[in-house]
Length: 298
Image (tube, rainbow, N blue to C red; front, side, top):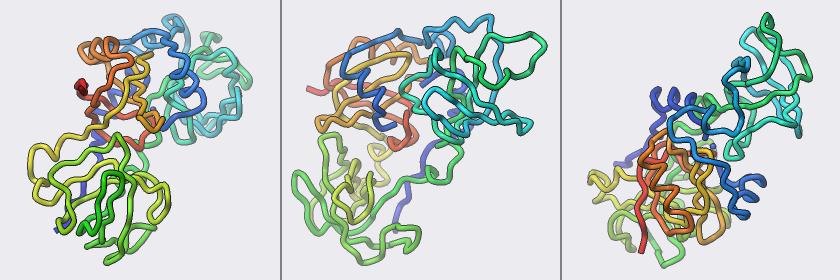
């Protein structure tokens, strides 16, 4: 029977993000930062004001939901429905979080004491991620996957004949074969070979050249403890503001927050330019996943 793997987006995880900055695939800012090797500091105590370079201790703040980001103009909706546009020209926004509509954020600014929110056009000092869009979106409630018989497999690709297709929303269809690239960062649990059944978690669009299998788990291993560990391999290219930037051999960058874990922060800081496996919770499809372990790769 097909085993669905659901993303671990617990209430605890959501609340913990309010206390640290951290979000996925590489944005132009993130790519530039990784390429240059910049490191603006390490926040390890879960306090967003420490993670970022801005002193927000005496600033006013309010919570809002992102509506639109147009260059340095950030439009948000306040809890009472008020919409306002703010100037982020001089604001610190963690580059790992490329803001998108639906994100809940904390906004810090210098303003009048008797004002609940700033006026339109106010320059803000820092925008801190509170609850990412991914944590409240149904699109991230489960991982895209194909399950069935492996009909062909090589070092760089795998073909699966779907056994229990969902037949809707662009998902896999029963009886159809799907081929995926196997990248350097993929993890395989069990002995995957033609004729065996397996579950493939993938990135990209089915039946396209960019469909990529990032995790393969054979049917006989689905109840094994190993199947509960989610890992990805790459080079730890940068650790800044509590965020791990993991660069794969293909040049992709995946982001992970240490979520205030001092031990993980130290390991990450000591692992720059080293090959590692990062174990994570939630989904690597998110802008920033939560790191729960780092292991060196020989």
